[in-house]
Each structure stands twice: as structure tokens, then as C-alpha cells.
Length: 251
Length: 291
Image (cartoon, helix red, strand yellow):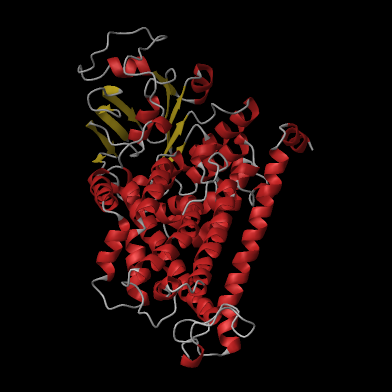
């Protein structure tokens, strides 16, 4: 069970992006989180993956509270999450070939010996041709790079997958292929999925349950100061821009 | 090609390019000649650059002594080559050490963030507020004269700008999602810095090192000229100019001119190459000679 309990988070303590958010995800379940651009859903995804320290609230992984954030989180807790971001260009180290990109988590955790076998296996799963694996990020398309990023997220066999607008930059056929690869992995491993996005049609078809950002922030612990919004127009009073790239933050 | 015609139509751009090519070419030739002279000549000629010949002191340039002789009759061409050797060694080693220190400090400050960053950068500000020649004099004064105190002095006063450059670069890199992905992939803090952040700043750091070589040579010369750097018997460009002062007043120009040219020409050539490299990796900032 992955639980977020009354999480308040943001990039400025005086004006958090979200207040008192609760969210629970059972193992093997899939939740789609819908919301317009800039509402804070990416921040929530980063909190869930232990990549962003919330101002208040807790994250429980199988009943055990997260013991730190970013590098301070124990490695076993961090690597329980596979994260795929919206922009493959920014989430791939430009100096690594796709093979090294996918194998990097194995090497970082001292399992470099498995790299060759796992990379070719995952390349097949996500539909990356062997000829692409020797290339660097600037030599492949966004879609191909996102496939590699998904393979990297799966390489440590995470128990939770966090897909933050994974398909927002991609065409329909690549989207279908990536969603298929995620579902394949989940069927075989029983991993839970939190898919964040703004595409209602996609998330409703992909996930067992979809939650609208509006429900999440008003259904909190009562500290939420937002007026009950309509589901279609969740408010964005806490700043229009919560893009990660624009927000330097302290590790 | 479209690109070429577009450039040509700008008028003057083509001429600019050929001037630049000329500058890069001549700089490269000079640097190659200097490196060759410094590496090959001393073992090849096997002459003693300190051999005194009081019978032939302060001879003007001649066929036998193309640069003339100094006030104790030592051959100035030979001493210039040996002096360049010492100065270049000091310049290169000091520049490399300064760059390593600056890169380490800048990367540490940016990657750790928080109070570490603030404390380190305020220290950098404090160091920068003291004129660095003064600080360098203070450092050499603590040691016996010799090559290594000069290297230490120049290195310890020149890492500040590199630290700033590297910090800024690392700050912009570390908020990228690929660092998040690396953390999720189990990478340790050190691994993120070494594998993902430092490779991104290496071009800037390498350029800073090359740009610093001429500057470091100037500093060695300045310290030696002030009598604080190398001992006077050891030929370096600074000590040569320094010991020539007396004879210059008597109208003997060659002991000052030739070592002076040996300071100016190679440092300009190195700076020219570094400037061209900077234009390549950062075309928006047009190069002025940064010394």
C-alpha cells in the first residue's frame, strides 16, 4: 500500500501548491490523477516518489513511513519507485547512450553484471530496436527516448510506477505502445501505478480508477482553504507555474 | 550551402572568419613552437644555462649570441628558453590545480546547496575582495623561494572564478529531471555528482584552465619580478626581466626586450587559442582576450 496522508507541499512554505492531500494506492492497483496544467499534480507525483520533500504530511510505503527524501531516503525505498517524466529530453543524461541510460540504475546499485541481459530484454518490452541502443539522446526522437526512459524506470523492477504525463509529448501509436508496455509489466509483476495526466480519455481507459485533482484537494483533511470547485475547473490559485524545471529546489 | 551564403551575405562576416582562422593558425604555430622548444631544446643542446662568462658580459645580439648576453655573460637565448620552461611549468600546473580546486568547490557548493552553499560562496566573496596579487605575495612569503611556493600561491588565488562558473553550471544541471531519475534509480549523492553533473561542466572547466595558463604565467613573472618568486639564479621569465633592470638603465635593451617578448608572445598565443575554443563552445559570448 502506498499512502499519502494529509500532504502539504510546494516550493514556498507560505504558498504551498497543495494542502492536506490524501491518496492511497493498493499494490497492483492503478490510479489516474487528472488535472489541468500547473495545478500541482507533478509535485504530488514527485512527493509520492520520494523526490520532493513535503512541507507537512506523511508518505507510507506498506505502512512504513518514508524515512527521508531524495538522497536521504534509504536506497531500498527510493528504488521501489520507477518514475517516468513528461519530457524525455530533460530526463535523459545527454552523454549516455540508450544502453547506458537503461543500465544506469543497475550500475548505480551495484548490479552492473546483469546489465547486458536486462537491457536487451527491456528494449524488446518497450519496442526499441537494437540499432537505436548505441545512440545518444540527441540522435533519437522524443518517442524513442521516452521508450528508453520507461525501460530505465522498469529496470530495477519497481513495485510502484509513477508516470508523470508520460505520454503528453508523444503521438498516438507511441502512447499506445508505452501504455501497453506498462500494463504488461504490471500484469507480470503486480506493481501499482500512479498515472498523472490531463488527458481524461486516456487515463479513464488506462486506469482502474481516476481521481480528479479537484476532488483530491477539497476532500482533504479540512485544512484545504479552497472553495469546492467544479471538477472541470479546479482552481489554480496557488500559482500558474509549478513546472519542475522552473523551480530550483534544495535537495 | 545555405549556411555559407547566408554568412557571406552578411558582408564582413567572411572576412571576420578569415581573420579568426589566421589568428587561430598563428596562435597554434606559436604554441607548438613553444612546447617544442621547451621540451626538445634543453636535452638536445645540453648546455649549462647558468654558465658564467665574465669576459663576455652584456654583449649585444650577435651571431654567436642571437639574444646577446646578460650582465654575467650568460647566453640570453638559452636562458629565455629555460626560463620559458620554468614559467610554462608553473603556469600549467598552477592553472590545473586552480581549476581542480575551483571545480571541486563549485560542484560541492551547488550540489549540496543550503547553508554549505551559502558559507562556501561567502568565503569565495571574501577571497575575491582581496587583490589576488597581494594574497599571492602573502602566500609566497610564507615559504622559501622556489618553484612550488609560486605554484601554490598562484593556484590558491585563482580558483575563485572557476568555482563561480562551475557552481552556476551545476545549479542549472541539478534541477533537471535526469537527476531525479538517477535518485530514483538508486544513485548515491557522489554518483550523481561524478557521473551526471561533473561531465556536464568539464568543457567549461577545461576552458577556464586554458584561459588561466597565460594569467598564471604573468603572475609567476610578477612575483619573481618583485623578488618574491623564484630565486634569481633560476631562469624564469620573471627573474630574467627582474635581473635586467640594472642594465636597462645603462642603455642595454636586449636583456629586457627578449624575455619580455617571451612573456607576451606565448601568453597571447595561448589566450588566442583559448578564445577560439570559447567561441566554439559558447558562440554567444564573443571572445575578447581574457588575461
